[in-house]
Length: 176
Image 1: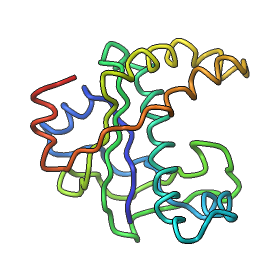
Image 2: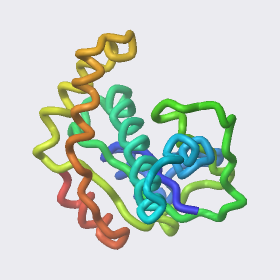
Image 3: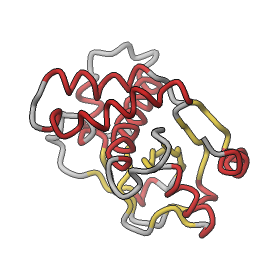
């Protein structure tokens, strides 16, 4: 099953040195029944790709929240890793969560390791100003301020760059 792990550049660098991304259980995002229900009216020809994109976008929102934490001094870029893990290792929670990012949140009952990474998705430099603004607006957005919510959602206007898993060492060496 394809899952999306939100992280930051410093956390990713630390994990890459250890060879292990996250211990079990690991909170990630994936296509869930709740997400499928939410997009029940979508065009079935593009549905799987659209659902994967939404799960990755939910993970990108979680990456933004991680930037607001201990890695707050990191380059203001959202980071999401796509990994393939065994279907049996994924546990989907309650079906009632309709809001992002809860609608796609799952737990993986095994450690996430570098060997499972398929691709790396990172904001480019053009997104940094909007990410900084979103970080500043997060507390007000969480309190329900609609203008702040709009500022946070502006990050979604920036597509994350795609890197093959084999490019991870180069990405970390070059830095932001």
